Image (tube, rainbow, N blue to C red; front, side, top):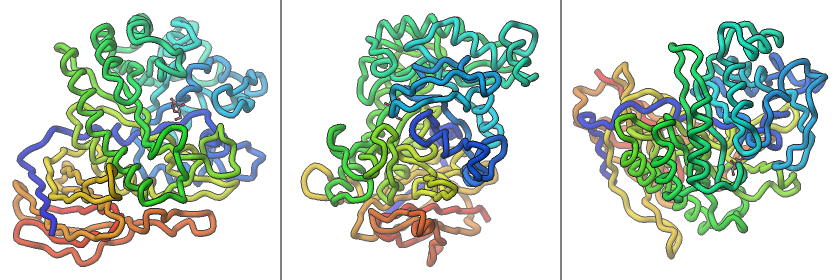
Length: 495
Ligand code: AHR
């Protein structure tokens, strides 16, 4: 029996809903075909956005969507993607497959997608190959309400009202694909760009997000905070779960037990990374709070055999579901500093929510985790503890068998999300809730299956959540049996 304690007397604060953010890049079949379709493709759409994909994504209550990259962002010149479609410049997507980018999906289309999804846009601007003027004009184009050259251009392109885009990323991976800069150089550039990203309306302040470190490059965060911390609202970092090495990422579907636990161990490292970057930010932030944004995270495996290596298309199994579950638990439990996170990526790329093939689509196990966790958004994080034992393959890839987080919504409902990482042993959970008063009802949902279980276009519902049966109410909480390799979500309602 594993004891768990949810303590409603202690909280780190509200879980920023933006932790459940997503990322969509002009990469492979994420935007084109995955979200945005040609009107002659015979796929139902609204203003070019696939209705099946948008309908499914709306159930996730996506709070914020990052675009247009990624590495693509630092090659992107936004004026190529506005105005009549026939006149838009056709460029080469040099980072991702060398394919033609016809710019048919640009600023207006992205903001239309956000409207349909009901989410906030997060635009990553071009610092690597752009100019301060170009970036500043983009903000003016999106946000200026009165008369100005860019506001007039927007109106000429059919949009009267400004969109009031709040979230702006100042470059992407500027230590790598975004310019191969050194931290002090980027930090100075960041100050310069931040100066000219203007809020055009006092009622709509901007959130300026600095391009942050690669994984555990703490020196980057330190220099960035020291030099530019006073000019930005948040600092990002990127961390991907790669089981072995970048050279040997391994298959998304056919993996050994060793690779299963290696991926989970690497995913759990997110805790240490968030903790350490947060400490540095706190040390240098002064009076003004600077948030931490994990604007790229998720699994990165070899592409599916036979697919374009530049398109980063990979399948998605229960292993991915567990990576998502522990990562979201970690972000929830660091909600005092993590203000946003964006899993890579929305459709057909890396750890996607949805995979498509022509007019068909399927929901991945990762999608279901986001759906089961969605009520953590804007809820009050609750302190939680679970008794664990180590499980895993021999050697260094041992991980705790259980992982949890908990929150309480404004209506009093407590959501407890728990993952059993053990692929062979089930776990009996005995969960006590403190500081909550009398418990009314408890329900549970469960996503489970063998580590390699996944959905295909022939069997799109092989992995999907089911009701968790036989939850037993106790004097101070409940008991439930968790099968091996599962993600569970319990909703406890007050009496
Ligand atoms: O998400 C895929 C790529 O990973 C992004 O373009 C880049 O920022 C990162 O290296």
